[in-house]
Image 1 (tube, one colour):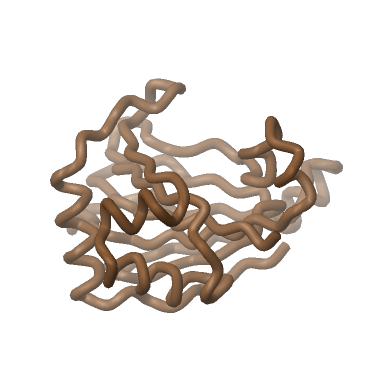
Image 2: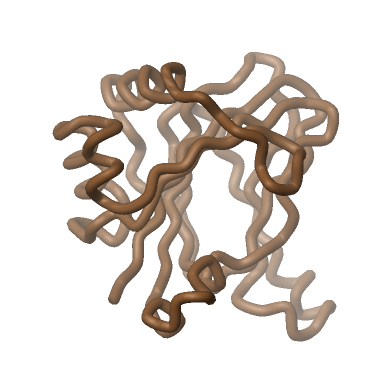
Length: 178
């Protein structure tokens, strides 16, 4: 399991990302629990976020200076919003080209309510093989300040705890080492 805090995003960059997100129509996620927006590959990210933010996201998210595979955003709100435990390595399982490559996720807290409770990132190692081992590896990362980031690889089992009060808005950058 490779996890940790990433480089924090600056105020200017958070505001720029928020401007794009506020001008974007979010669609209901396939599980129907929350709305999301997605941008695929470098070209679409550059077109949507502009030259500067594209450069910033490419440079400031791990692995550094690697093309962006995609970005997405969720706004988690009270009354049950959460994300169950999963791995990202299967996101392109229909494309054999990506099966053996290494995925990296950087998630950034873009906005939150003052009364936020819950919404912590829960990380649990690189497999589900044994429940007792799985439980012993649990790590919680709580992004409390706007701009803070967390980074993990695609093998890391992760999720987001339930939001019990307020809301938490995140922006995620997804990269692949080929």
